[in-house]
Image (cartoon, rainbow, N blue to C red):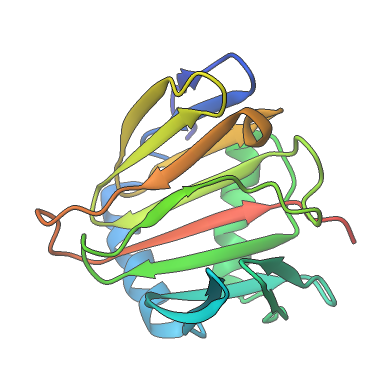
Length: 196
C-alpha cells in the first residue's frame, strides 16, 4: 500500500516525504534485523587533513564492483542480502526509481548526527533519486539552500521514506542535527543510483 506524499521542497530540486511506507510492526522487525545482520563498521573519514573514526557505524552494499568514495575514503561493496533487496524493491515501487547501491548509517543515540553536506559525489548519477529510509528513533532532518541559506526541517519517522531528486544536491545542503533528547538508536538507509 502506497502512502500519500508530502512535498517538502519543490524548487531547485525536489524532496518528497512518504510517512508510512513500512508499518509499525514491520519497522520494529526490520530495525532488529538490520542491527543484527548488517556488516557494520565504524566510519573512517578525513576531516581537516586528519583521519577521524566516527561514533556512528556505516555499511556499503551494492552491485559487484560499485565502490563509493566520500570524505576521502573509498568503500568497497558488501553483496546485497535478501533483507536489503526486499526493502529496496518496496522503496523502488514507492518512488518509481531504480537503485543499485545503499549506504547505511547506525546512530546509537541523538548525540550522533551528520553536519551540513551534499550527496554530490561524481559516482552518483546526476539528478537521480536518493531515497532515505528511516527505522528506529524519529529524528529531525534539515535542509539549507546553498545560495540564500533558506532552511527547512522535517521529522523523519520510523518506516518513512524521503525521496530527494533532481538538482537538489546542487542547490541544497542537508544535515541530521544532534539531539540530546533522543536516547534510542536509528538506522538509516540511503538508496542510490551510481554510475557503473
